[in-house]
Amino acid sequence: MKHLQKSFISHNQEETENFAKELASDILSEKNSAGQGAIVVALFGDLGAGKTTFARAFAEALGVKEKAKSPTFIIFRKSRIKNLPAGEAGQESRIKNFYHFDVYRIHNEKEILNLGWEEIISNPQNIVLVEWAEKIEKILPDSAIRIEIKHLKDNEREIAVNF
Image 1: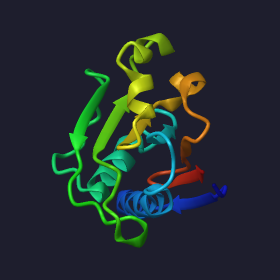
Image 2: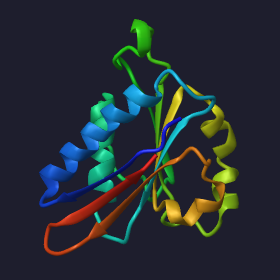
Image 3: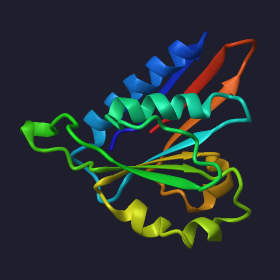
Image 4: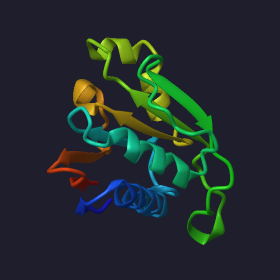
């Protein structure tokens, strides 16, 4: 797997959403046919940085129909994904499920492990997006795509991606 770093300055919510959608497309084309486990996208950033805005647009780009709400009070939501573009050589997409975790309220990694985390991230049919990933950094897979969102000024955000 190649290592890619990407950085972007967003000047408003629409630019953040567009970047999230483009990134979702890039990730799917790069990782859809490869890999043993789930695709894990880890969002890092302070309160109000734009993680939920990013997550909504990312989910929309995957074809998730219901509006992605931050699942703060239930820890995670699972959505079925239909009609993703085909992978390499026109084969059907391996991605079938989208998990959106918001771990803001957890106290330790054990809480997430007790929800079936290992099973979820080991399934190659899953794409998993985690808000507040710094709270569970110890249990993120090495292959996780790390996205840090920093609030610069007013509506400006710096979005740095490593995968």
